[in-house]
Length: 131
Image (tube, rainbow, N blue to C red; front, top):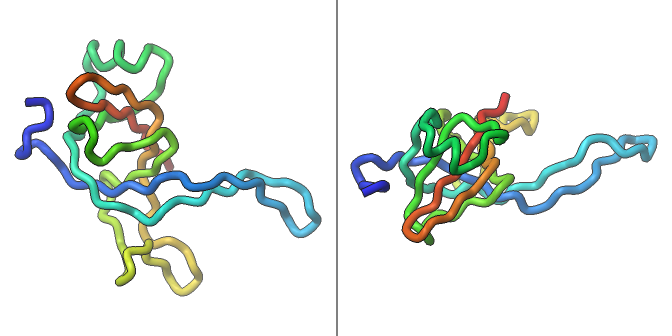
C-alpha cells in the first residue's frame, strides 16, 4: 500500500561513480571533482518529510527535505546519488545530460540522497534540495 501505482512519480537519478581531487594549473589541490553515471528514469512515492515517524526513521540530526518510498529491490538509490525531482531533465539522443555550446549542463540536478533506510517490504530514501 505504501507504493501504490497511482501515487508514484517519475524522477531521474544518477549514481556517484568516482570522487577525485581536482588540481589547478599550479598543481594545488582544489575542491573534489565528482563523476556521476548517466541519468536513469525511476518511479517512487515522493512526499514532504514532516511526520514524526519519518523523523525517527532517519534520526533527529539528519537534514532532509523530502522522502522517496520505493518497493524493496527496485530503483535502488545510494547515498550520494543525485536526483532530478522538481526539474524536467534535458537529455540528448544518447541518454546523456544535454549541454549548451559552452559545455554547461542545461538542467542540473536539484536533490541529493542523504540517507537510505531499508525495511522488510520497502526502502525510504531521505533527499536534500541543493542550490
